[in-house]
Amino acid sequence: MRAVEIWNEDTKEFKVEGSQHHGKDLFVVRPYEKEFREIYRNFEKTGQDTWMEEFELEVKDKCWMEETRWGAALEYSDNEFYAHKDVLNRGFTEEELKFVNAYRNRFVVIRIVENGVKNAYIFDNETKEKYKMDVETYHIPFKKFKQQLKQLNLI
Image (cartoon, rainbow, N blue to C red; front, side):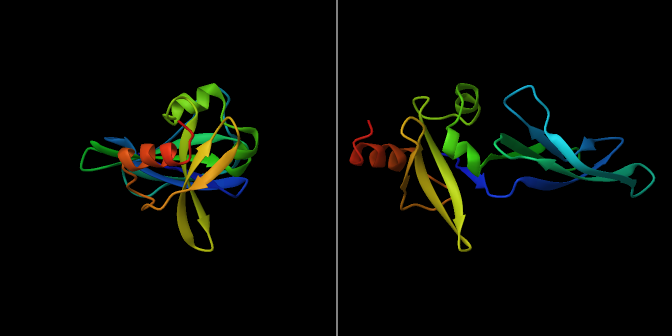
């Protein structure tokens, strides 16, 4: 399973590069219509047909995905999901639960950085409780996730 990284800052900085032929290499995707409030933006040409853009968005109380593309024609991509720490206090909305692919529309695997160490947790969206998992934070086998839910008597 893919963990949702919990973001502690109220803003996040981004750097996007691209070209006229292949487009840009980073997309910020949201599960809702409202745009992020932009704090800063800078755009500059770095070559004849290439450019670089830096911007900062207010992410307080939001959930989002960052899609990074690479390859000669940007044909490969990878996704990383994020949620601001305030989302854990209020709980994920139904739309956000679908967006992050929550198990049974209730349980989300989250990743929290504590003292420089990334830890994985199961977050119960109904009770707003989190339960620490004893797994690597980047590869969380679904079988182990489900086993831990059973051990905690959550399912």
